Amino acid sequence: MEDDLVVTRSVRIPRSELEVTFSASGGPGGQHANRSNTRVELRFDVATSSAFGPGQRQRVIDRLGPEIRVVADDERSQLRNRALAERRLVERLQTALHVEPPRRPTKPSRASQRRRVDSKQRRGEVKRSRARPSRDD
Figure: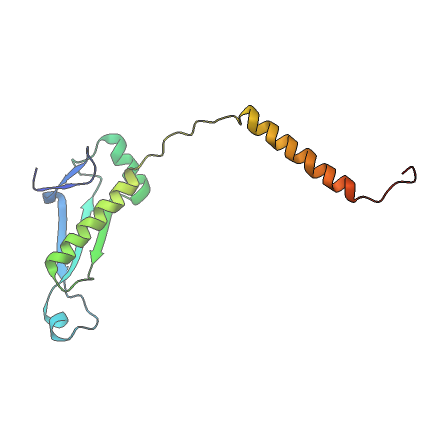
């Protein structure tokens, strides 16, 4: 259980299913950036993973595709970049697995309907009071 990446209560990804590669991050940073492989690329194959049920797997594939690729090169440390990549993967999967609860249509209350009609009548009275007087007045 410790070797699993926890996404939700029901989804735990075994770290053995994650493909991790390291490379030089590039960009500024001097000698450290040129010699250290701190950039982390994390690949996760959703289609073959044992972490999902069939419905969850289909939802993730529909939203993110059959393979998810996450890259992190923000930090100078390979360990921190790996943790950052795993966190980004978890966030993407949580978003993809989220199901919106169905909307329950509601009716406006009787009091709110009455307030609405009263407001419209008051507004109509104001507009009628602005009109030019007729010949009868």
